[in-house]
Amino acid sequence: MHTTVAIVGGGPAGLLLARLLHNAGIDSVVLERRDRAYVEQRQRAGILEQATVDALRAAGAGARLDREGLVHDGIELRFRRRTHRVDFPALTGGRRVWVYAQTEVVKDLIALQLSDGGPLLFDAEVLTVEGAATPRPVVRYAHEGREQTLTCDYVVGCDGFHGIVRGVVPESVRTTHERTYPYSWLGILAEAPPVYDELIYAHSERGFALASMRSPTVSRLYLQVPNGTDPADWPDERIWDELDARLATDTEPGWRLERGAVTAKSVLPMRSSVTEPMRHGRVFLAGDAAHIVPPTGAKGLNLAAADVTVLARAFAHLDRTGSAELLDAYSDTCLRRVWRAEHFSYFMTTMLHTDPAQDGFDTGLQLSQLDRIATSPHAAAELAENYTGLPLGVPAAGPSS
Ligand code: FAS
Ligand code: PHB
Image (tube, rainbow, N blue to C red; front, side):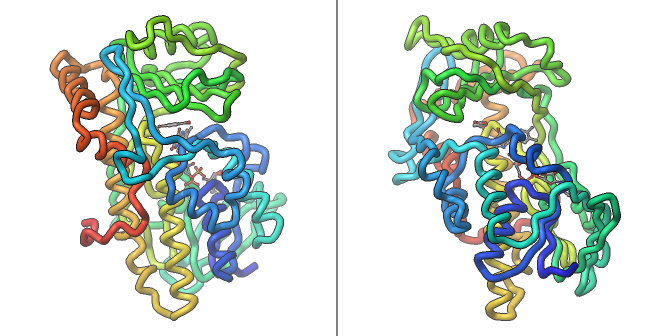
């Protein structure tokens, strides 16, 4: 089989790229190692930036999002047992975010690709990518019990943090910057109506908590837990009690979550990682294959969408004009946005979580930063601009290096 763009990985990055290329008249093949049911039920992100919503609409995948997505104009910060709302439109000139689960984004994109897109192969694990520096790279993959070959003009690694395409960039030119955190998130999905209208991020002496949602009847909730925590050590009632303790506020004495059946429970490690460059020869990296952020800033899925929006535009430019200038600028263009999101995610994570080794000075710094956001429109605007996402066309600030 031959195609113009071989896409490794059928997560949000790979699926959205395939749609954007399809709409630009560029053929591609998506190879996904897991089956459709697994990919569609994997609980992950929940917040979409404007640019991501725009990209999904441009890809033709915005209809259900527009019907079922929840538009949010702010978030609430809880600290010192007080509450403070960050008003996004007031601070950013009208920007807001959408609550629409990654699972639903993936379902919409898969349905579209299967209905009128190029080949999307499930249970197709890519084994090797050869000839990255040649005009005709070769992708070898296992599918239907045998090894098969896909030749192409370009390969895009959308295969996530544990994928193999990042390794195609030779170590001699590849730099990976990493930071791990001394805590993880215990996340639950519950059939429990959120008793809050917007997301609540809580800093407390007991540790961080986040109250999010999936719909008016389904809550998505997170607790900071030590690394290596076994979800089995957290029976449902213990989770609810701890969430109530960390989200407690003197602004509304007796405030408690509505409880319900917990339908999913998992522990997510926290990591920051950036691989540079995001290209080698005719092989490109996009999404988690190139970078990871701790989910506190709700950037992961949105960064993936931004990468493939830039890349699809570059491929369309090449197809229309024969010029590879946007493709050649891809890595630097994306890395500027990636580093901005890395900093914001690190900032939100270290401000809101209690490092087991932190002392009173550290806590004083955290509370001072939170006080600043609560009292200064400039500090609040910095958070609001980053959270709602910087427009894709952010002017180039010069090479990323
Ligand atoms: P993905 O990892 O989603 O997709 C990669 C795909 O490639 C997978 O389907 C995988 O099966 C496939 N693949 C891998 N190797 C392959 C091979 N050799 N051949 C073929 N296919 C291969 N972000 C947030 O903003 N908020 C959150 O709350 C949040 N929670 C998260 C929880 C978890 C457990 C994880 C792991 C991530 C979370 N993220 C969150 C980040 C997440 O949303 C990612 O940013 C997003 O999935 C990135 O999408 P992709 O780049 O497509 O990578
Ligand atoms: C989610 O709803 O899963 C979610 C929302 C905001 C975050 C992280 C996760 O910062």
